[in-house]
Length: 394
Ligand code: HEC
Ligand code: HEC
Image (cartoon, rainbow, N blue to C red; front, top):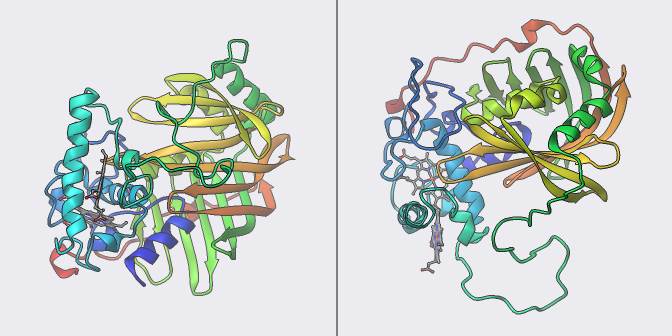
């Protein structure tokens, strides 16, 4: 299986993106969930490995945490609309045989310089700003050939992704969060949820596979997607996250993926939102599946923000967008929730679609049990095989 296909499958089936183990078989020293790009000044002992310490030929991205290298590569791939092989020789990522790889290094330097010289060092311009999913950016405006389709290929609006429609008489962010808690059944009902056991199907790329999901308070979650040759596993035990797939060594979650996994595993997310955010703002309205929604942006201390879209009618959460940090820009993950049903006084989505630049999947729950006993042993990480050394892997 090509590395590429492997990445696809991973990012489709797993809750997280990719981790460093894939290529060099090693595992990063630390699973720091820090979100800052660039070198991390962490005072707690296991100092995250730097990219140049783990990889063989890092010239520009020196100093970034090693666990950010893959997300950064995914960011590039998504920004240019290419595959890894556009720049890399298969199974020899360190080689500089392909011209686009050299160009990409120059482009990184250029991007850093643009931001340094024009935006006070804020990462305003990224690869995507110019490339927009193409290897060759378009420099000339297009003529109109057909009626523009809503949402498709709509011209980029200068000055941001969306005009900030301030709603002077609309609800505040805090009111929307409170309404969400109420709509979900109220704080005490939500906080009484101790576990969730779900059976259903996961649909992606025209396939439909059975999936079992176990969640347990606090912040434990494991899912088993049943493939023909075994289970694909995505797990988080409150501290560590890992991915398993048939015939492959266990892979550890790193960086932003751990943050994402913690959010997914939180059975009391609705009541935790208030504490999670250092600042919340209503950004305006949006239509999601014909429903009018309010967008709330929650800033988090030292982490990427989270965008929440609440149904203006029901108050329920229709969409959550979170971001994985990379050295070059943010990689978005969008989760749309639907088919809310009431279980023991709490509203639970029976369907959700998770979409990333690399692909998407939908999970539909068919059977759900709340507050049933779930053995803690389910969330114990299997022992990983001894770490192959760098020298022995190709
Ligand atoms: C547009 C070009 C481009 C694409 C596409 C790209 N990369 Fe890279 N990659 C680079 C560049 C440039 C470097 C070196 C960065 C530096 O020197 O700081 C690199 C470095 C790497 C390294 C480190 C190799 C080593 O040992 O030094 C790995 C691993 C890697 N990329 C994996 C991937 C994967 C996996 C993908 C697909 C998801 C991918 N790359 C897509 C340009 C690209
Ligand atoms: C300011 C706009 C801009 C930004 C930002 C930018 N690029 Fe480019 N890039 C271009 C243009 C324009 C070209 C085409 C140059 C040409 O045709 O010779 C290009 C070409 C490339 C190519 C060569 C494509 C090919 O067909 O060989 C690669 C690879 C590339 N960019 C990677 C990146 C990466 C990676 C980033 C982010 C680190 C990035 N670019 C950021 C404008 C940009």
